[in-house]
Image 1 (cartoon, rainbow, N blue to C red):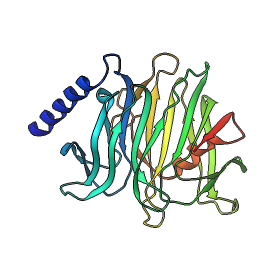
Image 2: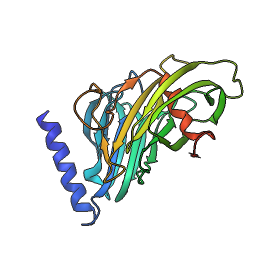
Image 3: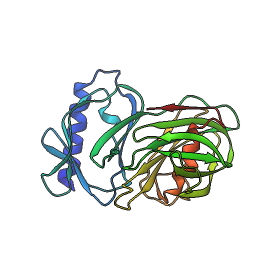
Length: 265
């Protein structure tokens, strides 16, 4: 543990030296979204995070504006590289989530998403769904109508919604008679963004969800990244948690036509 802390401190110092003086304005969260696989994260030949488990997060914000040389995600305790990220230049400003996940074919990859932290209107919260699972496209239904059609791996849907509860169902794309998830309810919280990542593999039976909450959308946005802590922990916002894949049905309605939404690939 002391060695790991020393390595992290050294890397942080190098990042600060490499970055411009004004470059510490980004919020960057690293998320582990591959089930059943603990990993080590290597930078410049050294492990900076070890035993990084599914659903956990790490804060990369101190490295904003710097380049992480030779970034690799390895199977924990081995030299087996699951994801070779190469040299990764981190943004100097903005709010980003970087997730290790499976692509549509089941190959481990890194996905980078810029989080929408623009101010929400009074009485509204934001819902963001990201398809980062090895699974085919799906449709999301709201009250029986298609709200978000053909959601592919690597895409997201975003919507600002009135605070309250949404009910949704998930079906295979183009087959709205076969309900595979739902109906399920999701609370929308005023002034917060709820980000839902579909993770895992349909073929392997490991489909699941990791959630992220960003609070303060009526003021200064703050990401709440607390691993798998209980939701009722006295902190504002919803912490990272593992929940049933049914949450995808709740979240993916974010991209639908029944609300003011936008889809991004």
